[in-house]
Amino acid sequence: MPLTVGTAGHIDHGKTALVEALTGKNTDRLPEEHERGISIDLGYAPLELPDGTRLSVVDVPGHERFVRTMVAGATGIDLFLLVIDANEGARPQTHEHLAILRLLGIEHGVVALTKSDLVDDETLELARAEAEELLPGSPIVAVSARTGAGLDELRTALASVATERVREAAPTRLYVDRVFTLRGIGTVATGTLWSGSIGEGDELQAGGRTVRVRSVQVHDSAVTRAEAGQRVAVALPGVERSELRRGDALVARGAYPSSYRLDVALEPLADIPARVQVHHGTASVLARVVRIGERFAQLRLAEPLVAARGDHVVLRAETTVGGGRVLDPAPPRHASAERMELVERGEIAATVHEPVRAESLAHLGELEGVEEADGWVFSSSWLDELRAELDERLGRADPLDPGIPPPAEAWAGAIVPLLGLERRGAKLYRPGAIAQLGARADAAAALEAQLGLEPLKLDDAALGRFLEEQGRLVRVGDGYAISAAAYAEARDALVAECESAGKIALARFRDLLGVGRKTAQLLLERFDADGLTRRVGDERVLRKRGTIAR
Image 1 (tube, one colour):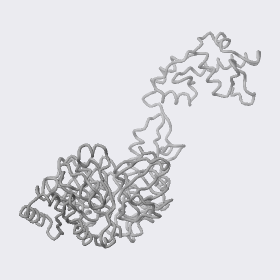
Image 2 (image 1 turned 90 degrees about the vertical axis):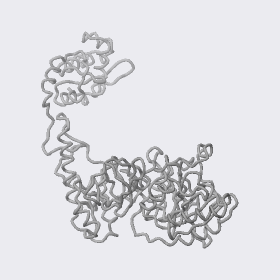
Image 3 (image 1 turned 45 degrees about the horizontal axis):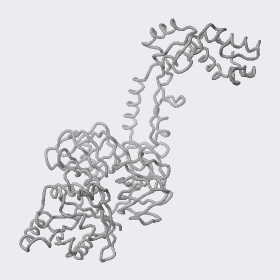
Image 4 (image 1 turned 60 degrees about the vertical axis):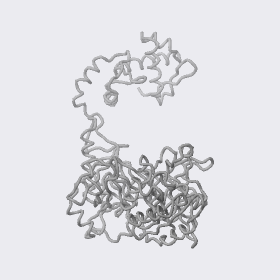
C-alpha cells in the first residue's frame, strides 16, 4: 500500500537537509529558497526504506508565515516526520505543526532530533525527554544530516511505523498542490492521491469542467495507473495552466459535491472566532462559523470546497484555533444540532444533499430520503432550495428579458426539467413570462419621440433591443437607432434607385436622403446585414429579388 510521510517542525531545525540526506534530493526548487536558505513552498522526494517500502516524502516550510502551506502539504499524508533541533528543542512552530497533525488525524510518525553532532550528551538527553513528553510512544532518533549519523536508524524507525493504512473504497480524489507547464506535454497538476486511482484516458472533474488524463507519473516515473497514497503528476491536455490552482480537486465525475457549506464536529484549541480560514485538502477558504450548540458548527464558505464525510479541516485565524471532522459535506442550509448528532452517531447512515452521481455512492450502501433523476442523487430539500434560489433570481431579472441562464453544473440537464420552468433558447423563464416595459414605459415613449432618420445614441441597450423586436425602432451601427418609419423610407429610396440605375454609391445615397456621409454609411451597412444589398467595390447592388425583405 503506497504511503506518504510529511515533515513538520520549526524553521531552521533542518527538515530539508534531513530529507536530502535521506533521499539524495534537495526539495528546495525555487531560486528564492536557495537565496534565503529557507523553504517557502512544498517539496517532494521518494524514500526507499530497508524493508523495500517506498515512501513519498512531502517537505513543508517551517516559518510561521507559511503555516497555510504546511497544512496544504500535511493533508493527505499517512505519517509524520517531526524534526526538532537537538540544541533548541521544541519551538512555536513545532507545537503548532504538531497540533495541526493531531487535528488532521495523523497519529503515527517518528521524531528526528537533528544536528545531534553539535550538542553534548546531556543536551541530547534533555531534547529526547522533551520529545517523549510531546509524543509518548513515538520512536525518537538522534540524527545528523551533515555526518550521516543516525540515518539508518531513522529509516528503520520509519519502516516500523509505516504500517499498511486501511483505506475505504471511494471514488478518485486528488487535491492539487502544484500546477505547471512542460514543453511538449502541456499543463501538469500534482498532488497526493487521497482515494481511488488515476490512469491514462480517465475523465475527471475539475470544478465545473471535465478533463482527460493524458499520462500519469509517480515521482518522475511513468506508470499505467497511480494508486491512493502516492504522489501523482497528471498531464491534462486542453487545460490552460491558469485554469487550475492549488486547492482545486480532481475527482471522479459527479462523485463529490462542491459545496459552500460544511457541517463539522468541532475540535477547538482556543476560542474560535466568527471568521476563520478553513484549510481542507490543499485549499484555504475564508468562512463564517455558525456555532450549533457546544460541539458542532456549520462553516459557511466564501468559495466552494470538495469534501467527503469524515474528512478533517483545520481552522486558523492569526494562529491555529482548532479544527473539525466533516459530518456532512453538503448539508441543508438550515443546520440543527439534532441532525448533526444523528449523523455523528451513524443513525443517518449517509447523507446526500447536493447532487452526486448514483454510481459514486455504491460504497455507502442503501440511501434513504433521496430523489434520483437520470443517474443523479439529491435530496428534496436541496431541490426546494434550488427552486427558491432560481425563483429569487427570476424575480430580479430585467422585465425586458425576464429570463436567467440555467445552472452550469453537470447535473443541470437532468434536474432543471424538474423545476417547472420554461427553457427558451439559452435561458430559463417562469411559465408564460413575457417581456414587458414595466417602469421603462415612459423612457420608451420619450425615446421614440426623438427618433427620426438621424441615428440617435441608445443609452439603454436592453430597451433598444426590446423596441426593435416590437418593430418600434431599428438599430444601426454600434449602439445607435433610427425610427422604423425612417428605415422604411430609406429602404424604399435605395431600392428605387437600384432598380432604376442597377446600383448605388454612398455619395448618391447620401444625396437622395439629404443626410451626412456617416448616416448614409450606417444605413447601407444595416441593409447589407439585412440581406437587402451586397457590396461590389465602392457600390451596392440589390441581392436577388427572392432575398429582399420588403
